[in-house]
Image (cartoon, rainbow, N blue to C red; front, side, top):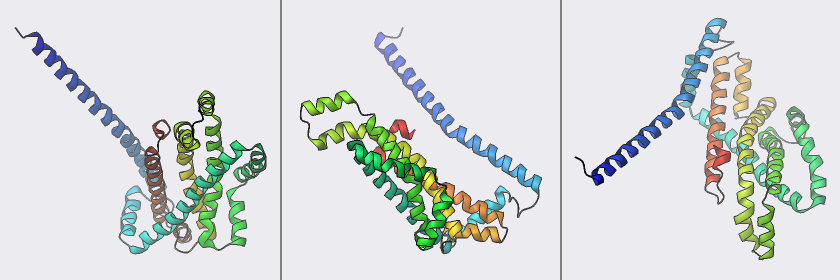
Length: 277
């Protein structure tokens, strides 16, 4: 007959084994579902390519991946990726910094809020092509994608950070004022935890918006050495393989940039897992 201590030990082992199996099953589901979804849409893509049966209209997944592999082994490919990545990143980071500072000033001053709000609303409502055409009159194409990405992301950052500031815990702010908590300590303990989830959500939207608007500006402006120029050339030559290959590159870069930004935010005091998940 097993002793009580041995029974307890066996129960613990069974519990730990069950927990490990449950965690493994949960991990498999998290990986398996996106994989199944991706395979489903690849199959739809392949079926559409078979139905069209014209490569210049819709290339097959295999043809696109083959073309992408060919591009990836050229120096020009990585130079083009770096060119667009650098400029769109500059526009995004600039919008994040300026938007956060403008939101902080607007929250502190009603006058600033009154002056800035119409400008932000105008930028948010105006079509991106209007800014691209105006900028083509004012500046050269090498700066176009950075400026357009900045303008498109700025309203998102401003509105989200301002909303986060306005959702701070009023009781904590009052306690900080009563006990004369230093400004830097209050920012770290109260302001940043309240604002970071909103800022992280804005980053998730802003990264994709920066890439879409930035590449659109490159296509319209035909910026030398950019991804947009490669897409424009693919359109001229009726090469759907190149169009789809470069589109996949843009999607991968956008997802990678979003992941990198959220990883950096997780290291800042004030957890943002709820927004990043």
